[in-house]
Image (cartoon, rainbow, N blue to C red):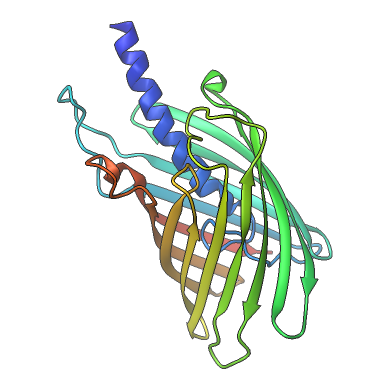
Length: 254
């Protein structure tokens, strides 16, 4: 009986870990998960609160026990430490019924290119480390670089693309699959206060999601995003619905 519960816990922790990694990339200036080339201005701070929920609800377990939705709550703070350099951290708490996992993700980003022609480039790193259940998950960094191009036109879009890589870890819990891939983003203003956005982390791994949505600018330097994160393996089998999440966040710069 003990081993049965242990096996179930490992399966739930694996799912929670996947969602934590997918969502935690948003710890920096991002669309949803994909980092942009933007950085927080020197001397400013950015606070954000994310909420993700499995949608639709996962299938019931083979034993007949009702499935529980995964809920993710993540506060984060990013500070402009110098011109074109930001640093921050977020704490992702994942609730799966009575079980929960907590992850810390400190991060840094440097925008090393910005031109009057609308081209910019940046590079950054995010460290992933569990604060509990440490025997079930490794600590490792993700590094990335990207370049963006803004079209100089009324309601002109911005395109972002670049590589990412996972370093210093083998195929541990939740990190199976490719160790490197592509990040891409698209932001299309449709109003002075609203954008249609879409982004993609390539690879069938813990980071591999496509997320379309909307971004709305709010009074007081605020922003509200609503999107739907779809795992790259979402149509692979009957359990694929476990890898789709409604994604909501509110952020404010002060």
